Image 1 (spheres, rainbow, N blue to C red):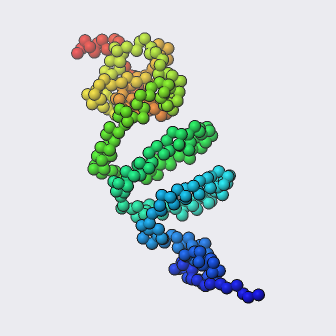
Image 2: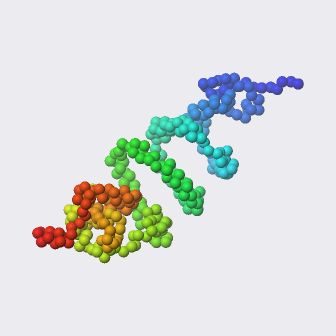
Image 3: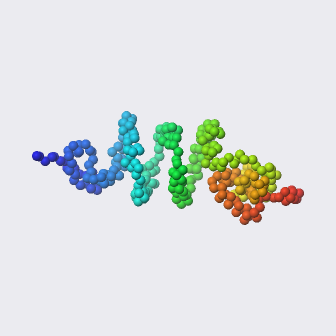
Length: 324
């Protein structure tokens, strides 16, 4: 039996150039030849920009459609080689380490480049409505409480302080101005996603809202919560926001009188009560996030600066008005 004919080629990896023996059929099918997978990956890593075999070329619409159809569902669900598997902590650390800084700054293929206006318009048009509503892969799906808790824990403190990629950086005035101008009128009127949506129609209204506290905002105030009491509170704090020091004039309207314990029945239920004057910005902040934290902070300000008091008594107020 005659020996099968084989062709000899050089490995295309310039750092290797080992001799490779292959069948003529394999030689004719491939443009490039490698002695190992390692050499193949090393060669691919060099094929960037003008060196890339497809640099400056574009696939026809028909080719793209065929490629899309061929790949649909190929690596999804059970067909994915990683289905049901998880990388070990060691593997994740190795992957993370190998990718750190690889495509950042000057190493990024887009470093110093900008898309033309025409390209941006095309990208915008291509993405419009693509992952919205029923077309979104998570449409109608809800994360379990366990998954939400895991996500929350994994993100805690991840992008805070020095870990934030913008830590210590400040945008120049021109950039801030451009960002401001680009947002003007963007979410106003009919452009606002909440336009015309109220009550039951709103996806963030009532118990659907993350800050929902059981409807306490609809509870009535204590009958003793009067304009005269509010005026005594503002006067006691010298008409200034106790958190930032903003005056009534700087606030643009009367300072808000905040219930420190978030109890609308304060003064009527016999419980200990404290109030605080806050500007619009600070008052909004106290109604979001960790309420206990805000309570502790404001209590400390009142205790240490205002002798644990937060308003003038009726007798004190009457005496002050007579003196003035």
